[in-house]
Length: 361
Image (cartoon, rainbow, N blue to C red; front, side, top):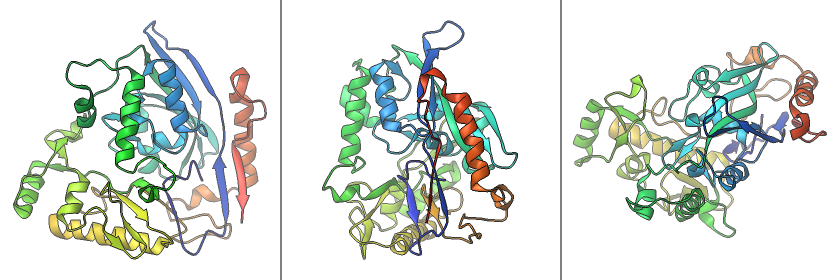
């Protein structure tokens, strides 16, 4: 199942199977119930994320401005609880509509039911591979103030500034570009899938152990809201990686680390998927050996992988938990989602909208 494909690593053996591309388009806007100065943006999963953020800023609705410049589509944002520069989509999402592959029906989840946490939701954890997101509803504040929690943004504007949403977006894009996180023609640091590693959330005892092993106090910042994060902090993965011996610009064959952003693994030209995974494994092993932070929970890659496990006769990736979700045919799925298009499009959407573009090798 393919969204924007911006954080995808395909096996060197290729993928001899069926690819489903979510291509549903359309955005509708309505006043939020309750009379507050808020708008509900109902957005189809195939909409370009950056284009959608630009539209909300142009319409002076706050809530997503720090997430400008991120590639991909709207449908992927609740899966990973996409976040950057002091903002996460969890703070703006009102509802998620999805196709349940187990029950073969459409379902809707409130934000609370999505199980959002740092780079986590039910869609990539407890219910991984069960749901196909078809629509996301966002509640944004009309004429609201921008979010200025991130240090780079605070430094750019100063403590007394009251920047517009558009000014914040401009700075966010500038910061992303300095880190090689914007697609710029001819920039070798752009040959990446963005941040490859998550910032681990640790407790006080782990912080003490890491400080002892490194000989210096690690930088840290609040882990975020929620009972699970009490007495816990977030450590910069970039700092841990550099302390483990992997600096910006590190190269392993044709794979390497960005010269401007330690979290980004780049293709230096002709790198294979095997080389990229070898470098990722070396880094995660080094961090685990040096600081005891295991990849399994706290230092997991933010990348989707295709065709690195067993495949069925149709070529769709399987594991024991997901097998029951992949037993119906592509034709059946396509019929269900096209029926969803008919009920969802309405006057705000293209009449000939197509949710799935099927490409079989």
